[in-house]
Length: 176
Image 1 (cartoon, rainbow, N blue to C red):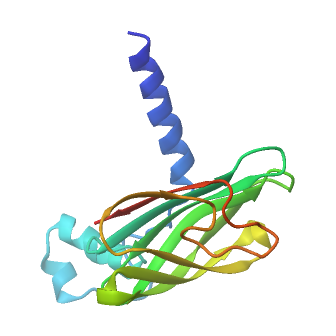
Image 2: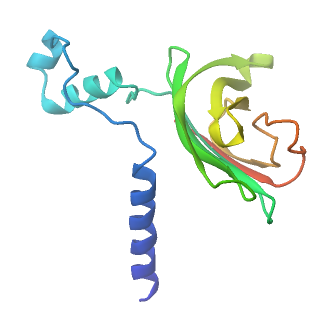
């Protein structure tokens, strides 16, 4: 019985923490006329149209979640969620930090992506800025097949040269 309250606490704490990583979505675009679709559509459709105009779309074809960590006193990590849209654009939200530095820094913005490799086996995501690493602009390369993947710190993301490759661990989820 003690596991259920613990689980509720973890879910509640996660929801509070993650809500700060989301974009502010306006329900009505400022100074933009409503389209005929917005005027005649039910509220659920209006919410989707509004969300699409503000950077999120219900029609993302990929959602990429990446965690890369180096343990220890001088370690650090990054945690990113990236939504990829059919038109080659995307947006991301997350954080990165170094244990020896000033703490976690918020990472949010827009990115672009394209298929790469033999038979489009990979996705390359460009323009993700890691604020806590001095504004380093990274490239993320992930499989184009939905699934869960593991690796070391540099398996899926380019990092500044002072971070040695092949250490730490990464967890990656590529989802619809």
